[in-house]
Image (cartoon, rainbow, N blue to C red; front, side, top):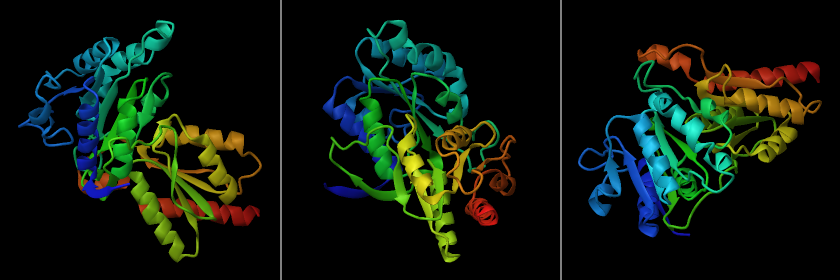
Amino acid sequence: MDEKEMTMREALNLALDQAMQVDERVFLLGEDIADPGATGPTAGLSTKYGRDRVLDTPISEAGIVGAAIGAAIDGLLPVAEIMIMDFIGLAADQLINHAAKLRFMTGGRTGAPITVRTQVYGGLGTGATHSQSLEAWFMHVPGLKVIVPSTPRDAKGLLTSAIFDEDPCLFVETIRLQTQRGLVPIDPEFCIPLGRAEIKRTGADVTLISYGRSVQDALAAAARLQEQDVSAEVVDLRTLVPLDVETICKSVRRTRRVVVVHDAVQFAGPGAEIAAILQCELFGELAAPIERVGARFVPTPAAPALEAEVYPSPARIVAAAQRALRLASTHG
């Protein structure tokens, strides 16, 4: 398969471009997504496909998602953008009570095949109301799929799958990853099935489970642990709903120790559900308590030095892995 090196922003742009090219039902809508204002993944697409397929909307998150749902009912495949995830609450009713429930409420006659792209700005000094990772909110809603890529390749493959999925998908992008580079298949048919995690690094002593930006921290932590003769496996979830429980359990059953890492707040975060699943599925097989490393339970400071203390880091992950190894040795 032919591949080309590109940034995650370019990979997302390519996925949108190819989807619009192969299926005229695909269209985009959101704030400042048309040229010349577009600077992110939608740049250049209104020039290429016209403003009837790349719609600049008013600043109304509820209006954007509501229009997308209506268009989906009419047979189109809308890709809506909520510029900053912190403001997705303004569209919560549309997502939770309409998009997620439509198939059920119509007895399977009508679905809402929409893709909602949104961006997390955490780690850029943007303050408490422009930096939140809120994916855990939507994991709790039956009918929604939740996707968080960590590499350019995954971004293209997962976005393509989301656009053509029959269910509503929330696609969470991380601004800090948008300049990350990697090899990306350029085949328009390339896609990554939703609900399939990937082992980014193999190991035998401890499993580090993560997704999105914090996968990079997990990989850095694994490299540091290797210097201490600790072999860490890194599992990238890629999608939170559906969750690849089989891959998670297979890895942890082998290593018997696990650290779950995410940029979302640790309290009641995605790691809590993952830990509960592992405790239920692997009770008696774990060598140490499950460790979690998430954002601290505070509003995110804008000051860079303080903000750095809020989010996971390789040092915090290494410390958590060391605790698991130490406890395993104590109880072994």
